[in-house]
Amino acid sequence: GGSPPLQKPFVFNDLQMQEVLFDRRAIYAKLEGVGVPVPKHVVLEPGSAVVDEQEDYIEVDGARLQKPIVEKPISGEDHDIRIYYPRSAGGGSKRLFRKVGDKASQFYPDEHESRATSGEAYIYEELLQTE
Image 1 (cartoon, rainbow, N blue to C red):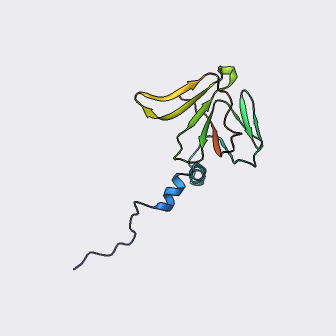
Image 2: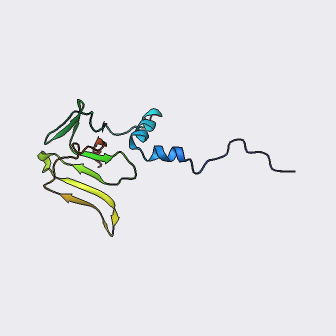
Image 3: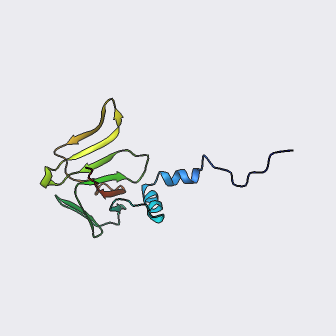
C-alpha cells in the first residue's frame, strides 16, 4: 500500500504571496482586511497626491498625520525608512537601516522635510510611542 494522497499541500514558496509581502500597501490592506490593527497611515502615490508638509504635520490628500511620522518606501525590500520629528520637539530626522556593527540608525538634526516631493511612493504613519 502506498501513502494516502495529499488533500491540501502546504506551499512554502508561494511566489504570488512573496510579491504581496514586498508591497507595504498590500500588507496593510491584508492586515486591515482581517481585522489586525495598523498605525494611522496615508499612502502617497506620486503624481496624483496633494501634499502639505509643515513643521508639525504632513497632510496627503486631506489626511493629516501629526509628526513624529514614519516614512516607509512602498517596497518592503527598501529599508531606507525615516522618522521625521516636529519642530516643537527639536525637529530633525532619523534614518533607520540594517544594523552595521552596533548601529541601526543615524540622526540628522537639520533634515526636517520628508521625501514626499521626490516622485516616489511612500507610506506615512504616525510613530507609535512606546512606554
